[in-house]
Length: 124
Image (cartoon, rainbow, N blue to C red):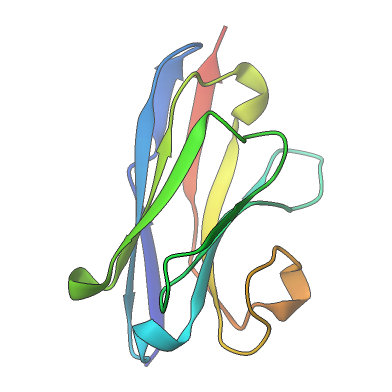
């Protein structure tokens, strides 16, 4: 059974940091791109960042470039999202997702498996 489990969310003040984790199981981790997405109340889900588990290449949305860093520990089948200099507009439920077929990118429809999400709240 494919599972993606996010953790590490919480409440933080603006300017602070959080590290999210996405633990994957039930599929061949090295064959997938793992992406982070977020959805704020009343807004559409949007892509944040993704990483290729096979070669470590990464991609970031412009809104988080320079503040967020994605990384992967293939031995643990886990992807991390280090979030620094957080802003109130980063408040959202953060989801990780896995894509086998389409390569590096943040098109939601390309992702096959999704986690349940973890809440990140940034206070001003």
